[in-house]
Amino acid sequence: METDTQAENPYSPGHPWFYVLGGTPLRPKQIAAQVRIRGYRGYGQHEVEKAARKAEPIRSSALRAIRADVREALFSDLSVYRRVVRTLREFRAAQADAPAAFADVHQSVSLKHNHLYNDFARLIWLDELLTEQRDLFDL
Image (cartoon, rainbow, N blue to C red; front, side, top):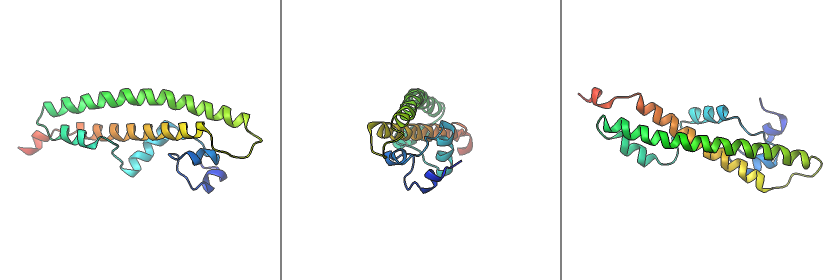
Protein backbone atom coordinates (compact mmCIF):
# COMPACT_ATOMS: atom_id res chain seq x y z
CA MET A 1 0.00 0.00 0.00
CA GLU A 2 1.34 3.42 -0.94
CA THR A 3 1.40 6.31 1.48
CA ASP A 4 0.73 9.87 0.34
CA THR A 5 4.48 10.52 0.48
CA GLN A 6 5.21 7.58 -1.84
CA ALA A 7 2.42 8.52 -4.27
CA GLU A 8 4.09 11.93 -4.71
CA ASN A 9 7.62 10.52 -4.88
CA PRO A 10 8.94 10.87 -8.46
CA TYR A 11 11.75 8.37 -7.87
CA SER A 12 11.77 4.58 -7.98
CA PRO A 13 13.04 2.40 -5.10
CA GLY A 14 16.28 1.89 -7.02
CA HIS A 15 17.16 5.58 -6.62
CA PRO A 16 18.56 7.04 -3.38
CA TRP A 17 16.25 10.06 -3.47
CA PHE A 18 13.27 7.71 -3.18
CA TYR A 19 14.40 7.11 0.41
CA VAL A 20 15.47 10.70 1.08
CA LEU A 21 11.88 11.72 0.27
CA GLY A 22 10.45 9.16 2.69
CA GLY A 23 9.85 6.15 0.45
CA THR A 24 9.39 2.85 2.24
CA PRO A 25 11.85 0.09 1.32
CA LEU A 26 10.16 -2.74 -0.54
CA ARG A 27 9.99 -6.23 0.86
CA PRO A 28 11.92 -8.84 -1.11
CA LYS A 29 8.67 -10.40 -2.39
CA GLN A 30 7.62 -6.99 -3.70
CA ILE A 31 10.93 -6.59 -5.50
CA ALA A 32 10.57 -10.04 -7.09
CA ALA A 33 7.01 -9.19 -8.16
CA GLN A 34 8.22 -6.01 -9.88
CA VAL A 35 10.85 -8.04 -11.74
CA ARG A 36 8.18 -10.47 -12.97
CA ILE A 37 5.89 -7.65 -14.10
CA ARG A 38 8.65 -5.87 -16.01
CA GLY A 39 10.22 -9.02 -17.46
CA TYR A 40 13.74 -7.86 -16.63
CA ARG A 41 16.42 -10.55 -17.03
CA GLY A 42 19.29 -8.96 -15.14
CA TYR A 43 22.94 -8.49 -15.93
CA GLY A 44 25.08 -11.35 -17.24
CA GLN A 45 22.62 -12.23 -19.98
CA HIS A 46 25.40 -13.31 -22.33
CA GLU A 47 26.61 -15.95 -19.86
CA VAL A 48 23.09 -17.36 -19.40
CA GLU A 49 22.34 -17.33 -23.14
CA LYS A 50 25.60 -19.11 -23.88
CA ALA A 51 24.76 -21.85 -21.35
CA ALA A 52 21.20 -22.12 -22.66
CA ARG A 53 22.43 -22.82 -26.21
CA LYS A 54 24.36 -25.93 -25.14
CA ALA A 55 23.07 -29.44 -25.68
CA GLU A 56 21.65 -31.45 -22.80
CA PRO A 57 22.80 -32.51 -20.22
CA ILE A 58 25.59 -29.91 -20.35
CA ARG A 59 22.98 -27.15 -20.77
CA SER A 60 21.09 -27.98 -17.57
CA SER A 61 24.30 -28.49 -15.64
CA ALA A 62 25.67 -25.10 -16.73
CA LEU A 63 22.38 -23.33 -15.95
CA ARG A 64 22.22 -24.97 -12.51
CA ALA A 65 25.77 -23.86 -11.76
CA ILE A 66 24.92 -20.26 -12.66
CA ARG A 67 21.73 -20.54 -10.61
CA ALA A 68 23.68 -21.75 -7.57
CA ASP A 69 26.01 -18.74 -7.82
CA VAL A 70 23.09 -16.33 -8.16
CA ARG A 71 21.27 -17.90 -5.18
CA GLU A 72 24.39 -17.47 -3.08
CA ALA A 73 24.59 -13.81 -4.11
CA LEU A 74 20.88 -13.38 -3.37
CA PHE A 75 21.21 -14.73 0.18
CA SER A 76 24.18 -12.46 0.84
CA ASP A 77 22.38 -9.44 -0.64
CA LEU A 78 19.24 -10.19 1.39
CA SER A 79 21.25 -10.14 4.59
CA VAL A 80 22.86 -6.81 3.77
CA TYR A 81 19.55 -5.35 2.52
CA ARG A 82 17.85 -6.17 5.82
CA ARG A 83 20.73 -4.56 7.72
CA VAL A 84 20.67 -1.32 5.69
CA VAL A 85 16.87 -1.11 5.96
CA ARG A 86 17.21 -1.33 9.76
CA THR A 87 19.89 1.37 9.58
CA LEU A 88 17.55 3.54 7.51
CA ARG A 89 14.78 3.17 10.11
CA GLU A 90 17.21 4.09 12.90
CA PHE A 91 18.50 7.06 10.88
CA ARG A 92 14.96 8.30 10.26
CA ALA A 93 14.06 7.98 13.93
CA ALA A 94 17.16 9.95 14.94
CA GLN A 95 16.51 12.61 12.28
CA ALA A 96 12.73 12.83 12.74
CA ASP A 97 12.68 16.60 13.19
CA ALA A 98 15.39 17.42 10.63
CA PRO A 99 14.60 18.38 7.02
CA ALA A 100 15.12 15.69 4.39
CA ALA A 101 18.75 15.50 3.33
CA PHE A 102 20.81 12.95 1.43
CA ALA A 103 22.90 10.53 3.52
CA ASP A 104 24.99 7.43 2.81
CA VAL A 105 22.23 5.19 4.15
CA HIS A 106 19.95 6.27 1.29
CA GLN A 107 22.58 5.24 -1.24
CA SER A 108 23.12 1.93 0.57
CA VAL A 109 19.44 0.99 0.52
CA SER A 110 19.05 1.88 -3.16
CA LEU A 111 22.17 -0.10 -4.14
CA LYS A 112 21.08 -3.20 -2.23
CA HIS A 113 17.59 -2.87 -3.72
CA ASN A 114 19.17 -2.91 -7.17
CA HIS A 115 21.34 -5.93 -6.31
CA LEU A 116 18.25 -7.84 -5.19
CA TYR A 117 16.39 -6.73 -8.31
CA ASN A 118 19.15 -8.20 -10.49
CA ASP A 119 19.44 -11.37 -8.40
CA PHE A 120 15.70 -12.02 -8.65
CA ALA A 121 15.71 -11.25 -12.37
CA ARG A 122 18.45 -13.78 -13.05
CA LEU A 123 16.86 -16.46 -10.85
CA ILE A 124 13.43 -16.08 -12.45
CA TRP A 125 14.93 -16.33 -15.93
CA LEU A 126 17.12 -19.30 -14.99
CA ASP A 127 14.13 -21.09 -13.49
CA GLU A 128 12.20 -20.54 -16.72
CA LEU A 129 15.07 -21.92 -18.79
CA LEU A 130 15.44 -24.94 -16.52
CA THR A 131 11.81 -25.92 -17.10
CA GLU A 132 12.63 -26.49 -20.78
CA GLN A 133 14.39 -29.50 -22.23
CA ARG A 134 15.45 -28.10 -25.58
CA ASP A 135 16.76 -31.32 -27.12
CA LEU A 136 13.36 -32.97 -26.71
CA PHE A 137 11.66 -30.21 -28.69
CA ASP A 138 14.34 -30.01 -31.37
CA LEU A 139 13.89 -33.65 -32.52
